[in-house]
Length: 453
Image (cartoon, rainbow, N blue to C red; front, side, top):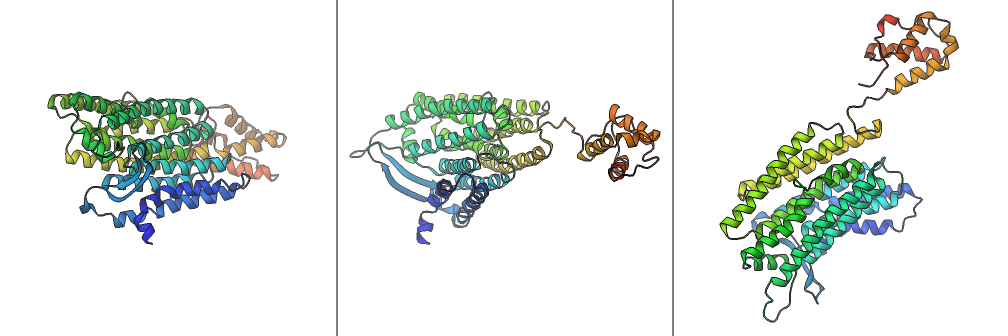
């Protein structure tokens, strides 16, 4: 118990990874075992994170549950984990949505189930690692670990244009990652070396040292981190990868993408970008002005584009651009209320948007389309038409039924609920050998074929 209490962040971080490693030894042909193991470790990952809520004390201030160990001493990289109030909320959101996303895949995934659940668990490890890392090198490793599983989830288990969406997602995120790596290296080399010490990637140490950098250098560092996080949010005009990724990703991928991955960008703004704002009021004002303008454009643009969408997933994707514009607006308002409201909106958006994508997934499994403008024939009415075709000689003997058959097959329109019951009654009686003299009066059928409402 003492080990769990003192290393709770490591337990939360590596529980999904342990599940992924265990699943490597399960035979590929045992699909049910993969589903059970994936769900067990998804639920277990959430359960082991619950003590964080009880043990976390806001009055402690700073980072809690810290764990530190030497990792690569030659370059100053350490295994350093820590948690504050913002990280706590995002970690709990990650473990909860991860559990729900894995559970939602039970009946949706039937191909390569072993690889699918392994990638989902590996993705969860990467996301948690981003939120608890206090070493820049470790943070960057987890940032990239997150990229690879999502690329394969979209590219292998996505819809028709999955390769296009996966490559677009990968290139956008990789471009941001490269720029962020340059900014991290600049922080690393420009930070002064303590007497008798070595260089370090420690986040609190480097951000504290950055306060003494010149304002022009801080501006360049700010934009380096900003570019990576703006792509991840995504902010206008870096948002174009999001609708394609959401539309083509499987349901679980869309839930994780909208619920957690986008929050990594806003988390980066709070954790890294704000401390790198220049001290000069004029430079700071210009930067804030640019970010606020981009946020306002994203809010209005995303909302307007939503009005034109017929695909449910694209509608939710563009609504995310609009909603997260409010998050970035609150962050760069540079007020306590703005920051608190931004974090609250991030959690609200993660839960509500994840639920919306789950609903879309349920509808897709039944209707096989994301387009809410398409109405497909009801199964009962399709069965009715098949019965009419099977009993064509018998129906031909009845003039009234023949007229009804012709009207249903060849005229556009709808059949009401009461008339649908009459259709089902006719189908049932015709299937069992008896066709009534007048099954349904032709005058009760409005012109048209039956469709689901």
